[in-house]
Length: 598
Image 1 (cartoon, rainbow, N blue to C red):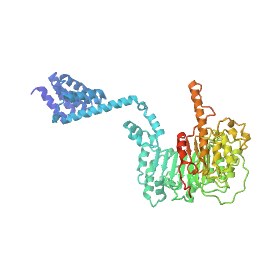
Image 2 (cartoon, rainbow, N blue to C red; image 1 turned 45 degrees about the vertical axis):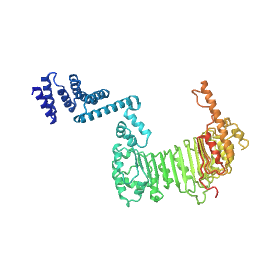
Image 3 (cartoon, helix red, strand yellow; image 1 turned 90 degrees about the horizontal axis):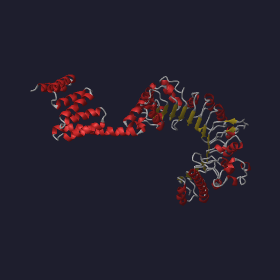
């Protein structure tokens, strides 16, 4: 046996024993003796270099083996491995294919062929990934920017983490993506532990949904939910909490959970609070009191559902509300508490109050109220108001920024509209949505508003008018044709008279439960509005073609095309006309919800 082969076999033995340093020394001695000897020495030393992470050295040995014996497949195979580790995927694929062309089909080479096939597939995948990376601008963004995009685009980060490895890495490492925690299943509260860990404890939005809320409400009969929630929330940084939503559990019961983990100030930094109790578990009086007594002073949005509002305490504790919503409230004998809430929160932009039932309390003496200007109030919504409370709220209430007006089941809706119409400080021109449902509405009050609201985009009149066909006439004609008919001479000189049709921007119309609405007036209204919309479109297209409107907005007398029409429970509408309506309006809803034959 030659001396170089002794060193070679010694190197192989050391390699099997994982003595890689000694194996490299033995192979090096064999190469120095053999000079330009057997290619198997270089191939074998390349294998050792790959094991110890010396990839470039392994590649040099593999290339030397190819130079000595280009007809042997092992040098190409080792070069393919090295190039793959160096991310030279195209060269790795070339080397692997060369090896596969030279290797025979003997059984002892089965494992080698499988390895080469794997290298080929990996090289192809890597090449494709590189092309995608170069051509997809999304992959060149910094992880922080991608994280911000994720945060704005989706509410649930889990699906995004399953798209690819890159997205998963970003999703897991960006703490801001895990700051919204929704707890619903009382038997799987370990979710809180994962979210708190990945957010660094800085949960900004916490939502307790109904199933868990019910479990907390039935404590001590369901101690597992209470005890586990206490354990999971211990690591939460309550100074980061900005939004708290409790469904099916009142604030007092949730407060007992917080006291168990010494988090008495859990509401101190909350800016948005949403509380709803389940009908099966109505809040106790103490719970209702706590629901408004503990309201944080920097609260900006408060929503109460089936939670009795303590108006006096609420007014005393809130001064920077931007949004207030209260649903299913007990009737008041006077709206003075609501008015006081408005006075205490001058920045309010959204007010929604819905009551239950009707008040049987005697009416309080009506007082003359001074003007109360809510300069920022854009959304004003009242539901099922007592006939005894409208005057204290709307008398002297000035809404110069009003955009959305909704009145539901309001027995004195005409008086409310009168107070709004009679005050010149109310800018009806800026009204974009008007909804009146199940209220005894006067034609004249409604029509006077519509003739001024030429920025109105949504109109919903349900079960209100004694004759809905007159409304179709109003929406079909030029306002100036209607001033004398309805005795509105003061509007003739207003800028509203310049628009070509009443409510020119109207795009969504809901006339459900208009039981006397007939087919012909409806078709005539739709036809008139479509004609004006087509005319506007043609004028705009002509301007664009000539270049005069290329950089200019549409003119002030633009007429929008109707985008949706809802005529549910309108028994006098001929079903055969629906295809015609749907041919010009993208969305037409027509459904029989009541039995009209009864």
